[in-house]
Image (cartoon, rainbow, N blue to C red; front, side):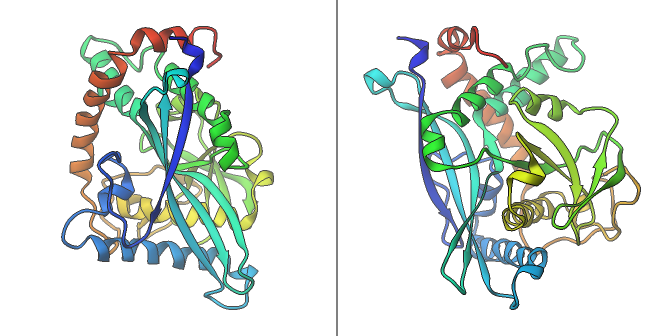
Amino acid sequence: MLATDFTYSIRTTRFDEDYSPSAGSRITTNFANLARGAGRRQNLRNALTMIRDRFHDLAEGDHPTPDRYTVELDIVSADLHLDAAEGGAGVPLLEMLDVQIVDTATGDRIPGITGNNLSSYVRDYDFSVVLPAHAASGGSGAPSDFGDLHGKLYRHFVESAAYRERFAQPPVICISVSTSKTYRRIGERHPVLGVEYEQSDYSMTDRYFGKMGLQVRYFMPRGSVAPLAFYFEGDLLGDYSDLALAGTISTMETFQRIYRPEIYSAHSAAGEVYRPSLENQAHSTPPVTYDREERSRLAVTQGRFVEEHFMTPYRTLLDQWAVGRAV
């Protein structure tokens, strides 16, 4: 088997109030967590309403009525095929949300940004298996090669024909800012992204995404109470339309309000200098059920599953493939 035979396949699933996680879906993804239990349909409906309302708030200058646009979300699931020549079975690699914006006045479909809620099996393994093992052995920080393989697989996927046939632009990954860092407001202001913040040192997550070829900027959008971290390649401000950026912000801010309400549903907005905290008691809880404890527990379970069924049996092949590829 030649390591250069790696290829990818992509399938999509509509994320709406009828969504149910498939048997092969990552159970630790934010969207899968929302879609379980007796109240799953109302849970999903509430989350989607939050996304819609926030989008209209951000895009209000672009349309005369509050319901001109609708936001549609698809779950993008990518499988890695280790031996295309022999029709090798696909190994689940990552999942993310793709945003499409529909102009109800014209019927036009406006491409949004993919990469929302990006989650990957190899990242589960890195953070839930490799990192704890490194700490248990007395190591500090992270191993020197931490994230190398994940970064190479991500780059190979984004540069693949399978990805480029579906998506015209690379992903933008938007997540919470780090609770271990302090952020300071700077002069940049964007009509949708809002005011920019910076930090003096990169977090472990920043470095991990850096190995995926992504740089980071931090913005607090208009109407938000805390900055978000945007990981991207190219020009974040120039490569994407205001409507596309509004689609990503409305989607990811909603998930962060659900997942980290102490930060993103806080009663007071971030000031000139900001240190996010999950200990903040002055916050509101959105009308969406989300089990953070379960998610953390399942991340460890899933990381060990990846170790057993992907990393260990294919280690030699993966190492062979990674040789010579730039991080």
